[in-house]
Image 1 (tube, one colour):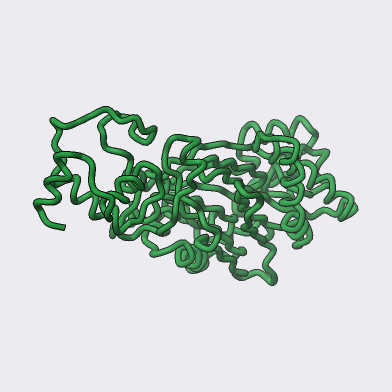
Image 2: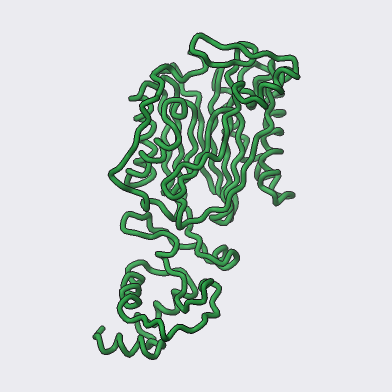
Length: 376
């Protein structure tokens, strides 16, 4: 397009119905094509005149600058993951919300130095508007983790039919799965951690957890912990154990255990310790994603958590080209650092994927090079 034509467009603000005209319409209606948007941004920078500002009626122009929201407003750059936006949620929430495709999610699970892999993970499209992500870390055998892996999603989906509050749905599902497992295992003394995340409309993220598997959000390059480990080191957890008649002891590595057996105070299963204060009720957290700042969600089991801190995991993932590479690198690195436990991770990319990528990566030198396993 000639410079004279561009200048004419800048003066009148009404481009003809060619390529630029379609861009103008698509910019307001969403979604946009990235290569066209880059040309449009160049046009804006070169020919936009502040004296010609007019208030905009579009809901995607919150500052009334006359400049509608663009892809760049919420995090698109050269090393991004290209995804279309979800139009109905974007209109509902008044801001662009990119689609999270399960095909882009990275997953990895390594057996480590154990005889078998007792970790389980699950990624699925639960409903038209809800994505499901979960990690389970079994102990004393894989039966409890297998049961959670097989039935947790079903219980959640059944509860969604009559309840819209995702935090309440997850709490009820954890308790129902625990009851069903008791009948299935006939109160056998093995159990599992459970960390489950639901993503509704690409923006509402709700996480529930019992045990020491974790969920972490990378926001502006910083790790935001969405879960807190349920261990006897927590004052509130220890008090519940003692009030229920249980006790806490420490092993030779300085790790606290409930009744000398279990390194966590909440779990699915472990029925021999239920009367001692070990419960299956999860702690939940709800957060609204901001795709311009939020790069990814990571769910990890303790084979990774006990050897790499959250910020280190965040930094390593930010160096990777895509979530699949990131998941494999984190699980491999945990083993290289000395973890002997199963190492499982799920990496879910959001709008700001790749934005914080840099050559500066910090590592923790306070890492403990001992076995991270509960049963070592």
